[in-house]
Image 1: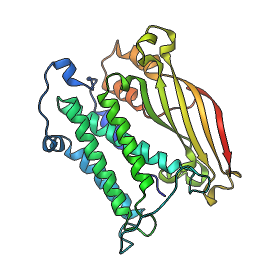
Image 2: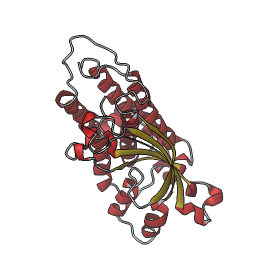
Image 3: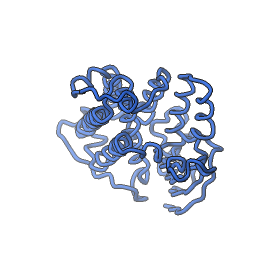
Length: 297
């Protein structure tokens, strides 16, 4: 059970944002025109981004996932969120978030380079799906893994959520998927497989609702998170009990609290990049939460 390119996809996302300019995601809404965009044109527009992400996945597959170690294709039933699985579903949410972040990256780059938001959304989803399907197929030729239907479904879910955010009017203003990372001792030098270090969450941003945009509630968001810890044998010294937590929190919408006021005065790419980064990462001290459900193995 592996955590697909969480750090890899996010790293490419952050890297692209460093060079981002503060332009609208939906370029055609400001220009009033829609330029045709074929799949070939889309692929050519972001060939380096797609190529680098694909190359990163191939490197990890050969270096860490033992691709090619099996002479025959095999399937692997990994389960979902049960306590008897390898990480109680944390790896599955890692797949979903990684696929989501990858698709967001491709979509943002296409929107920066083209002028058709729907074609950009469609083609970014196509490229992301192709890469993640390829990863699962090659996993089928690994003695350590195998093709996982669960991974395939969660990969598709992450890409699908990103696609809907980029095509349904207003949804991007209301919903984000994020992670929070607190390194565990056992994986201090290898965060990719540090399942116990991650909390995965969905944030409902109150400022995205028209009825709340002129109220103080626009500075807050509702957060639903999932965290699992202690399911690996080398983590038992740090986590005597293997457990999962489903949490509910109220957090600050950092875009509304910090970045939007700054951007009204300054047109700066670094500020835009920081604003976008915190749509994918939740820092400590910006929320309060309570445990809705706890399971102990």
